[in-house]
Length: 325
Image 1 (tube, one colour):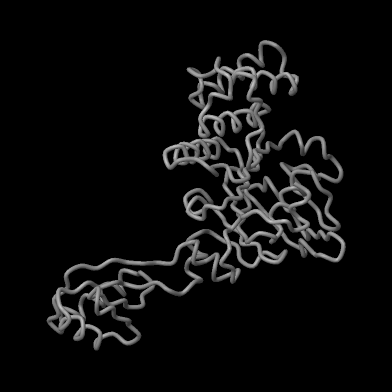
Image 2 (spheres, helix red, strand yellow):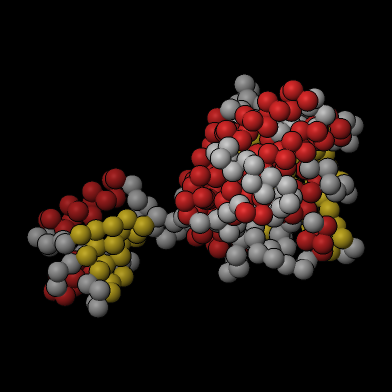
């Protein structure tokens, strides 16, 4: 973190156990203002416990947490005032209209009659809910409910927002719309702490990603830097006939061929220099190439390599940490 940046979230040495079960084993988390920080990990890794501690819903056995400059052990009320939480399941009242849900939250926030009305109207416009504002939430689509849920979180104008599975159950169009809303929030200086079961989502949104496993952060960095730690990148070459495939296979050590598909996979880090070397070798040996494609490791590869787990990143479990939801 640069000297000019500020930490919206700074947690140090967090530990938590439930009986003899250690859920968090001295983890450190630092999130800069106006960024998206994604935490990934298999079920039981400690993600929910981490979020519950950072949002003051649970007390750590050891360690410190500072939210928006406020130590939660000393000034918990100020820290909570800076926090917004949008859980996996929409916290909206189906019997109320969209406007009434937002107005209820404004009243709970003691915004005042005029200020509350203005905030509600602005959020309805920003989240494209004006046309449905007078309709009961029970009639809303899943995407509309998630937008309303996030809008309710923003009534109090939080500077740090915790998003737990924000796009679960959404269709691709609604998911993209939610991503745009998240990008707009960070562009306005809001900090997002994200947990998600969609690793593509973390890749799209996160400035930094932490992989939590067994109560420890086993890796942390930008999505690109994490991908570079995982082997498996290759250039896939497609040939017109078996003869060309066989000749090409003899040129590249460590390459694997698929005779049925007439393809050859050549290990590569995806750099322009390596790609150029592959093409130059084929040209030098007068081997005709039909097409090629690049494969580089994605966050799925990172997740499975670092956690050694075949499970979904955030599936449901009955572990002790989930019991505190």
